[in-house]
Image 1 (cartoon, rainbow, N blue to C red):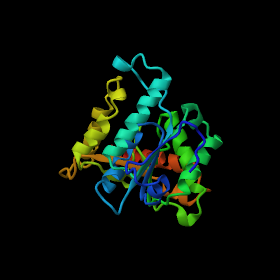
Image 2 (cartoon, rainbow, N blue to C red):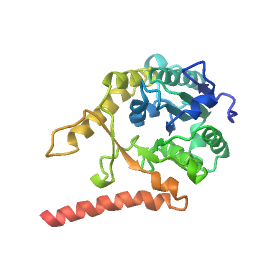
Image 3 (cartoon, one colour):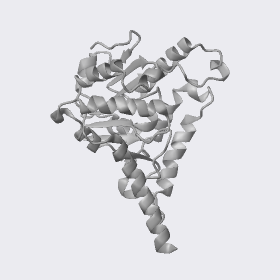
Length: 283
């Protein structure tokens, strides 16, 4: 499999397996912007596949990690050193999570934010030529991070370009730099992420350059999941200790003519109507 960037990184934790075979067995795939995004937004997929031999999780990271926050022992790191550190951390997470494959495309963030970047499209097409995942995890289109939205856009285009028979059964748009608790309950896709807290902690903990570098994602993401689980239903006991909310993006993949903007704003419109109806009913 040929990728466009000379520093692109392909890692198969099972060293006896070729990348093509690792992708071929993939049932759950996450395409994300940055190193550690997979572990925070698609932990549900990691859980689904962990310690299984009939389900396999693989991850794709689009950017190179050069723009990461850095303080403490990482304060003096150059962009090149930070790229190398982030690449190693992502490999560690793939090993801990027993991924089938981990691919880092090594594009600059500016390329991810360019919706017309053909190199990213070519890389994703090359990967999808070797796998037919049933479930795909993407960033959600209402995210407030431009690179996340760019990664979503590239991934959606790649999935839409597949023949209909090879498109995934389910596509989730997951929380990142804007959570999805604001969705009306009928629009929420509940991803149970409460199991194996030790695994969740281990996956978050390998990204030391971010944690020591000034961002406590390991605490923030676990706290978000627990908060969602506790605040979901006011009149029922909690059934899990972790929930990640997602949008159902499957219709956008099934119908390439469907407007991304209209589909996304439909969620906002239903929230507007829900708030208005409740105020009228009680007021």
